[in-house]
Length: 236
Image (cartoon, rainbow, N blue to C red; front, side, top):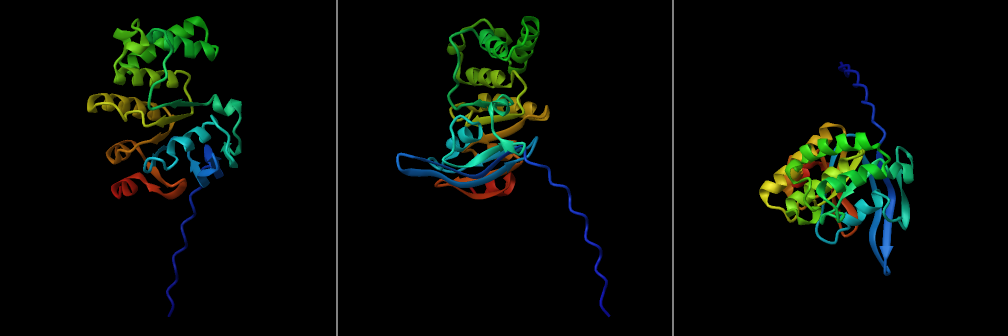
């Protein structure tokens, strides 16, 4: 007698990606640097981008953020072509902080002013950001005289100033000591807790496990692997 199979469980609904790459490719100087990248980033996730030097990790982030245009394929934001409005909902922090020749407070005020925040609201938001970054005592100091870790926390605070939906991080702790790295990681976790989606490049498998929920591995311009960060980082 055949046993009756239990009814299959209903499939969980799959959320539409917040950000997606479809057949993404890029070439320069006659060389193909990225090829046929297909990738989706879900709202609220923490995606770690792994791979050796020269694999195309930084290039991928710049394409996803719309800083450069792909040679093939497309970047989609909520299912539509990436445009200026979508880019305003994103922010990026580079490995080497890019800071204005202003005070620490002035860097944050400028970012908020560009986005059209009123003077009083910008002042209040600035003080909140300074406190969250642990920079209140340094607010009047020239930004470019800060230590490497302090500069990176300022760059991160400035990126978060206007509450982006996605934050791209290109090895933000690569040149920092363990204490400075820990403080940057705390800010990244806090941002994600508030709902910011994280897409971050790292060469540190331990950092990937601490911060990530999912990982992708690039190799010679192709997406070689993807999966849960704990499993993927453990093999690297």
